[in-house]
Image (cartoon, rainbow, N blue to C red; front, side, top):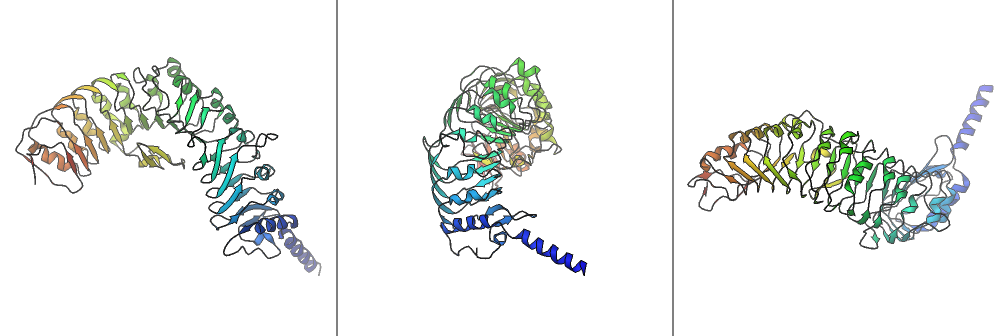
Length: 486
């Protein structure tokens, strides 16, 4: 008998715990009264924890999640949401919600970790009330306000309290200046100690990278390309202290600065986890910096479209994971040393090339990628002043997809061993002084390049009266008109 009474009391108490808080139930109903949707929300039962899109604590009655993405909701956000004091996740993305952004609502939700209001019709300014300095709770980690109709300028002081923020997305809005943030990179960014990715590319930022960014120990991804920053050496000295930094995009960001071969960078540790470094299009001078040799995990190095001079250092061939090297359009001179042609990641597929934890998409060579291993493996040294013969050791790099040797001063013949590049998709040797055997000899050579879809040998001096193979996917450029194609 006592056992039955105990079980009855336990069942009764459990059911009571699972029933939602009455104040929060009324607040959710107030929210639903300010929106419309078809079909309507079925929020009529007593227990709001069982309502569509609502989740409560597993051990209590408080609402912790409200998720109604893509539900065709229209209307405005109810201020009564402030009563959901235990709310940690709010996702109303992909709806038709409108009106001025309710700044004060979210400041009071002290447990809110994820706020996703992307792809709605919110408008107005993203600026905190003067009295508060921020509308974000301290607990916020992910904030997505992208694809709305916000305007004016973005006051990054809204992030002042967000010390655990890891993702902040306000792209695709109507901010003033064609969404081009101006001024300096704010020091307030350094307060976001938990941030892992910062994308400030394609704006009009000036000044220097704040030294305080050295404190962002969890930062893995930084993109500041296409801005007007200064002091590239200072930026590198600061960012080398970001121990987890794996991706650093700074192309077309620093303009006409002096050499980046800095002794301090050479003799100090840093960038031990860096896998992508782009500094293209900055008109940097000097030689290829010797501190790059210390980047033992680097996989992608882009120093193209600068004014870098001198030889290509032989130590590049010893970089164990490098599989994309872009040195296009510089003032590099000397031979293309055979030592450069021993890059392990281009010889054998034994080096990791997948930045698997990087969920953010990134742009590279005008194309978008979401995984590092999708990048075509390439060696690009076109538009320099390299001389001598094309080294036959290039034939070792069997994993190459792109080989660009164009517009240099190479002479001699094309090495037969290049036919080993069975994965090659694009080959450009135009604008050199190559000569040698008849093109009939290279019919067999080209036939081995089974993956090739674009071969350019423009302006080369080959004897005539030969035929070339026909391949439906192959685009041959620069072949004289009088050469037959069978």
